[in-house]
Amino acid sequence: MSASIKEINEKLRKTSRLEHRIIGVYVASSKPAGAVTTAKVIPGGSGPCLAKALFKMAGHKDVPAIYIGEDAAKESCFGAMAWFGYVPFPPRVENMFSSEAPVSGSMCIKRNHDVCAATLHDMGKFAPIGKYVVMQALDDMDESPKDLRSILCFGRAEQIRNLGGLLHFGERRAFTPIMAPWGSGCSTFVAFPAGIASDCPK
Image (cartoon, rainbow, N blue to C red; front, side):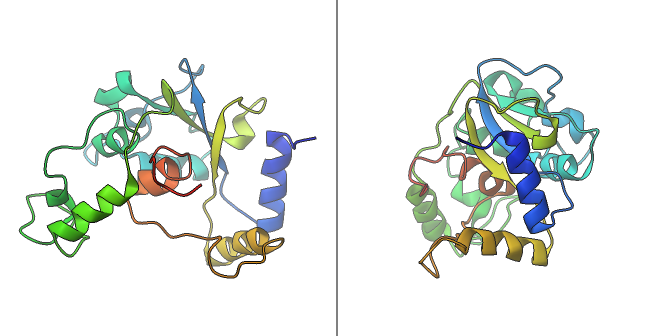
């Protein structure tokens, strides 16, 4: 018998002593009632960053479910739309991440274009896993969604260590169960663990 979403939420919060709300990521064929786009959660000059919106959801009970989909492009950050496979990355995307002759607004987080291009190639193709990707706090869910893809936990150093300890509890391998992948906040928070990148390990 599998655990309900309420049981998973309670056990994770209790054993890891998490203070922030735990977020579930699932696929839906229609927009859930009450769900909003990132622009509704992070309005104004900084842009509708999904990573910021998810962190705000984790810390505030008044933030409802957030959805991303092809028809939500105007109210979602471009990064999440691309990392989730709803729109293609722009040509020469490595210019955005490379410290070699960066373009205006680039992040300079890869040594050069070649390293960046090889990293992007290593991830595989980003393709949508459903009409909508929905992110919602577990304690706001009435029942377990049918297509739950991943669970996102925010915590301080000690709480993250506790989560790592839980993962290692029944695990023989010392080094490989926990990964620290390279990518944006929206890719590491959602796209990679939810299986949106074709070559990302399970």
